[in-house]
Amino acid sequence: MSQPILTVKNLAVSFETYAGTIKAIRGVDFELFSGETLAIVGESGSGKSVTTRTLLGLNAKNATVEEGSQILLGDDNLASYQEKNWDQVRGSKIAMVFQDPMTSLDPTMTIKNQIAEPMIKHLGYKEKEAADATLELMKEVGIPNAEKHLNDYPHQWSGGMRQRAVIAIALAAEPDILIADEPTTALDVTIQAQILNVLKAQQKKRNMSVIFITHDLGVVADVADRVAVMYAGKIVEKGTVNEIFYNPKHPYTWGLLSSMPTTSTAIGSLHAIPGTPPDLLYPPKGDAFANRNAYALQIDHEKQPPFFKVSATHEAATWLLDERAPKVTPPAEIVKRQSYWQEHFVKEG
Image (tube, rainbow, N blue to C red; front, side, top):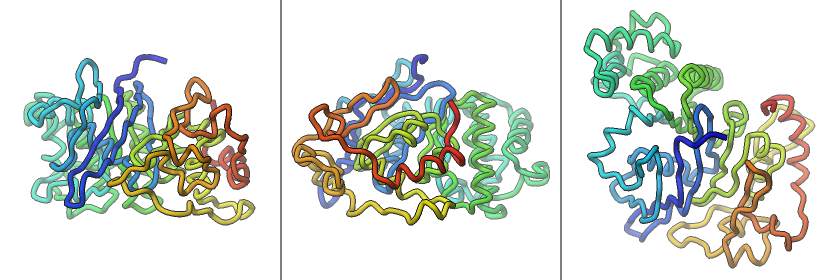
């Protein structure tokens, strides 16, 4: 595999609150390669959005990126950037599509001007050149009759159309990396599929790398090349999309997959993960998933597990992979779903 274009090492982010210090991100490591899609998945509150917002310096003012964190983009460590440095990165090198398009768009600016602005700022386009490029980009992301809608305002458009505009703004300065943070959650199912197709088509055309944040494993199977599973501010399993779906090793990943809806009546009911995530004001001493894990060992309550290699591309942080651990097989719900996933979702190869 080629050299990664983005490397995150030992990323730790904390938030100062009235209640105390929340250790939101606790030593996250991952790599992103050229042209691939990395999906980061997990329950709400697992740290997905905080991780990706940190890549663009977009966290709230009470956030601190802790010493020793590295976000390596080329020779630059973005973790050490001050606010004045971020203009060199946002939009031009890394861009972001947010969950709610209405709050992402400026209600006082026309769609045309919002798409053109990054071109003028980062690419040095003149006004006429930016206007022509804006029209072309609106067509590329599937905005019908784009010529008639150049001077529209966000409130005049539907949610799906606004999300297409947000994608166009993110692509306007030709970034190398696109972060898509739950970009289809606020949309109905039909529009979700259209937006995903737009993102995939633009990624292929531009050879962009994409970090896709979602809790929807059906979307993961459709768009991702590799998957990182997050829980309580840490990544607990990483692998190719096929490895995560067909050979998951962490009990939390088993729980997520067992709770994935299907259209097959033969598979039976969904299985919810019992309990709730830990309070990161007081991070647990051992494995953060231990209290919700039916397969937990005594050591899970005492010591955080390291990553154990499953293959060259697959690793999981669970003591069940230690050679001294008892042999445990995935629950029956996972096995039932595998033929369904093969037929409906998972990529070949």
